[in-house]
Amino acid sequence: MEQEKKLILDVNESPKKVGQWIILAVQHVLAMFVACITVPLIVFSSALVPAGFANAGSVVSYIDANGTSLAASFVGPTLVAAGVGTLIYIFLTKMKSPVFLASSFAYIAPMVSAISLGSLPMMRDASGAIVPATAGAEVVGFFGNLWALPIGMAFVGLVYVIVALIIRVAGVAWLNKLLPPIVIGPVIMVIGLGLAGSAVSNLTSASGSGSQYNLVAILCGLIAMAVTAVCAHYGKKTIALIPFVIGMGAGYIAAVLFTLIGYTAAGNEYFHIVDFGPIVNNFSNVSFTSFLSLPSFLFMPQNAPAMSAVLSGNHIGTIALLFIPVSLVTICEHIGDHKNLGGILDRDLLEDPGLSRTLMGDGIATAVSGLFCGAANTTYGENVAVVGVTKIASVKVIMLACAMTILLAFLSPIMCIVETIPTCVTGGVSLLLYGFIASSGVKMLLAEKIDFSKTRNIFVASVILVSGIGGLSIAFAIGDMSITVTATAVSMILGILTNLLLKEKPEEKKALE
Image 1 (cartoon, rainbow, N blue to C red):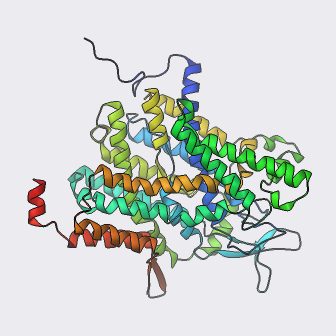
Image 2: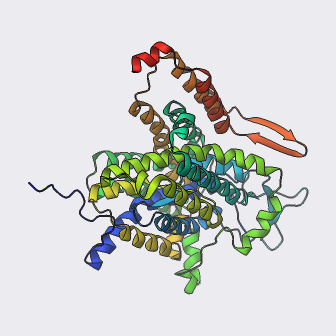
Image 3: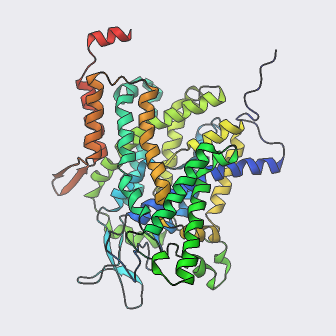
């Protein structure tokens, strides 16, 4: 009896009809879109302006003298970075792995911390433009240390390439010994739980009114959370693939209705959840750029003066210690994602095209992404799920999805709509996303059958969780350079050392054998 074909389209095959090709690519774009744009929306909307700084009733953050929102400015570049990064990965893996790369949630915490290093206070001058603040001036926002992001991503890319080269020569056993599941699982939990405060802060604030605690905003965020969870749990077919699209859409619609009825019609500022300013401004004077515009990439000249003004050599060591420990964690996630995808494809991707190639593709894509938007690229489980459900593994479908993703970044109306998404909606979804990151660490411990009846395992996990969630960082100076080892880095280092110090007892090894 002939064995049933596992895939409808294999990696090297293409859809026969253009219409099918487009629909299949659109599925991948929808699967990654919300998670991809959520990273810049969260990082740049909450990290730059401390609570209490307000301007005309609205909390503000700026990237340039025109007062353009950072959160909005980097959505387009993040989409381009995802498309370009995926194409780099596909090229380096010889078109043998149907993976989509996009912005990584694991790096949100180090990105937020890196941006705050040496941030530059801003004021509004006589013409209304946003400029560096002078002594005694009213501070309305801060220029973030934006160059910290591409530098951090360069460190991440370098780590990936070095590990890829070592694996090519020495294999992967050394990495498994250095970072076993008992270390990686709790570190992943620390990364997720460390972002809990950011999620709650976003959930409780209203974008339009500038309120730091708004019950209507909380309701809109909880609607987004609940709808996302219901769609992910009960949804079938397409609904199950895009729960975040539907959830954020539901939260956004609720926020729009509250704004139109409570604020626009009744004049109650408390219900001003959505700021429609970006859409109004885009179409107030209709021109070509109202429909097509160039994304404001991080490397573009208009961003350089602000970034160079706040960057200091003293920050380099701290930046390295923010990003390098997380890169070791995401390397382990990378390996897991490719094992998962390999099971779907019924082949070993760690052998062909090989782990060294997939790591190098991921790392170089991240370094390039750092220059475009400051975010890291990572393999997206959402798109792996699309491959698994549809049984369409065609790399050429992924390539078309890359082209569509890049094109979206140039469509001004789409970017304007994204800019109006209130932080409470992204905060509501973040309750699930950040919890999902933390829960992934628990899932790893269960999958690897870590035995917590052993005191050794309890101690390793305890050291990581308490030091990481408790915020144990180490600051020291080398000459004029001050360096801070972040809590995530400290927790990982302590976990590795504790794991190496507490060897398995002979009777435990014998029991395993």
